[in-house]
Figure 1: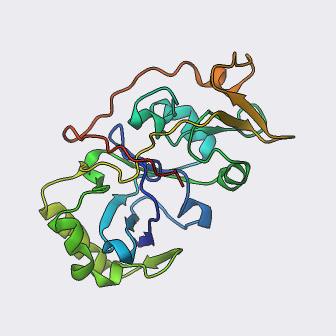
Figure 2 (figure 1 turned 30 degrees about the vertical axis):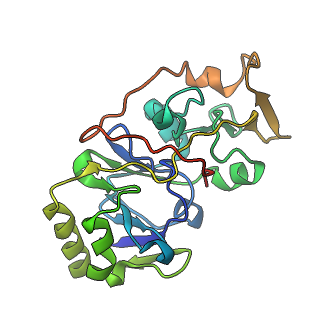
Length: 249
């Protein structure tokens, strides 16, 4: 058992995505850094020094998937640009079942460079609210107290680091459990509340974009995914969605 720690520069509900009783990490750090994570390991993300190194989330990984497996088996995690803030933040938008990588329309990572960087990365899941703690933008004694209680779990720069000391990990886990809350506890600090003029759906052989209101072609990835229906996230308790204008990262 080991623990991976990193600093989160953005918290939009995309990475991690804590909805539908599953905390998923499919994009951004640590996926882009080829993190060596197995079921049973832990991942934690905290804010930067300027915002107090507050704990944003912790998850015990229960499953590691490929992106195609994730796309096929977790349709509730697919984004819908016309949905509410929870559905817009869906992180399950890459698939290669057609033989090339394609993406569902999403305001997040809506760039060629991001598409190239994201594809074919591992997806880390924590299934069940008892296996993850998502505080988001919550500012309370628990999140503020984290850096003083666990200085060894603070990452002082960008990138990822591993903790292998099981005594430290166990002490941290017991502290989490004593707080009496788990699952979706808070709301994202930087919720997705913007809509671009067009969406990137392919880059091979050339970038392909669709505009809002276009009649989308029958061979588009949206047809592969099926219709996107309004969905309600399963939460430990009802949590309001923060509305800000920050960009996904």
